Image 1 (cartoon, helix red, strand yellow):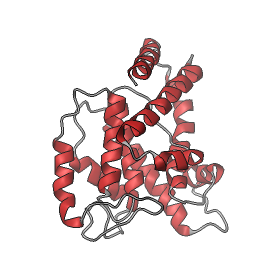
Image 2 (cartoon, rainbow, N blue to C red):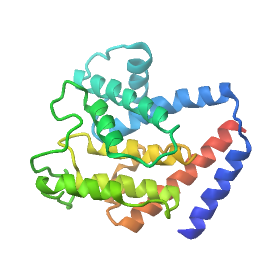
Image 3 (spheres, rainbow, N blue to C red):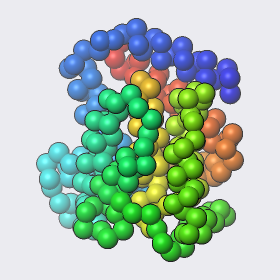
Image 4 (cartoon, helix red, strand yellow):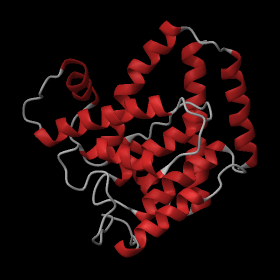
Length: 235
């Protein structure tokens, strides 16, 4: 893991050496990444929209024939949340509980009575052996999570732990995975790292990474790939 983190730091230093990045290059890259970020995160959760259909929904407001209205709403909601993450990333502060709740509110939408609130009932993770904690413990567990000092950690490790912590507690009725990925990327971007896309094709490996060290390694390997992609795209 230490070797991998050194490689990541070397790639980030190379990317930093290109700054200030040309605005047209960043704009072009982010136009692609914005759609992919929404598509991939929703697809992992079973959303039926393809990458192209997601692009049409977000950029042209088109309703795709034969696809559930729910899937369209999820794409629009997650796009709003992702745009907020990009705005939040400018701040050089620790991630707060309020930020998580605000992002979750956007993910589910204001019309959902569970949006932006921790659950008060049991939940179960489909296809997983892990059973999330009792609802009565959620508030305390989340408070402990936000009170944890991440400053000694490498930012990529910190990002993985944010994700894993949220996923394990499963503090919401719905939208836990999307919220966890948003917070993970908020952590990465606040430290100057590119956001990480987890592809639907990675779903089985991603969901199987229950062990903390294995999950951190899995995330680090993909962040290394993201850095290489950015360097290739911006040079």
